[in-house]
Image (tube, rainbow, N blue to C red):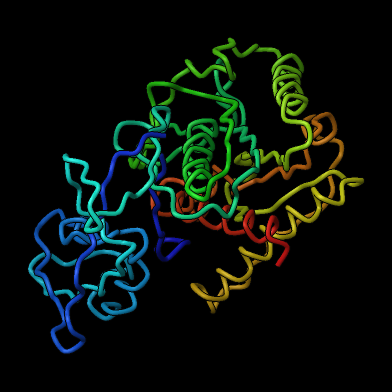
Length: 351
């Protein structure tokens, strides 16, 4: 059973690629239905109907909850109800750009590092316009980080932390943020497999080789972030670091957060994301108590040395079987990214 019952994936983007067609919505008494085919998921099914899958994902689930497996999976051959499309969320793609009132542009951006499947990012809002976020996934390059065994194969911290960071980048960009992915792997991108193959070709921002020595590796990241921070001085800037812990096999842990003890803004960021996780656990796992914490931990090098207000996130224990389900199932990695982004929005908007 997944630790995150469902995920609400979002796509992100840099070029204007789509033209949204204004359409007349069907009358309320003529509910549209469709039969799921083998291989269909919720996103692909909605996309085939010309409906924005990201804006209508939750509506679809609410309308069809009794007809879904594990709250998110379709059954081939079954009939599903389709949400009515808002005029602003229809995503009919037209290769010819027209300037008549029948068409409306949907802004998107192309972010190659996210991978071919996920590189197009639809801009859903400008809620984070003017903000700058730095994302650092733990370890990478010559150091794969914490290791575990899943389905007889070795899995590593750096691959899963990187995938979560890329998914978070998509979410933040979709709301108008400027995002720097500090640890990068140009041939991976966002991956939906359970076993993310280990490689050692990650580099730091601007194609810098990652040192094997731990202190040099951390100092390199600090120098990159602090240099960019100076470049964007005066802008709203935040840093989010993502790691996966390694503890005894039997120790199941929840997602928890660290911040600098003297950083009011860092504490607020960590607390906002923590509140979001508490809220989502109550909503999706009402019979389970969320035990994740947020606390100061200035002894961590990145927490102590970086200039932007920041939070350091541990998403689970890579050696624990329950925690492994949190990271190996791609819907759960997406849920992690989505919930973190919701906390980021809560933090920025001051709710």
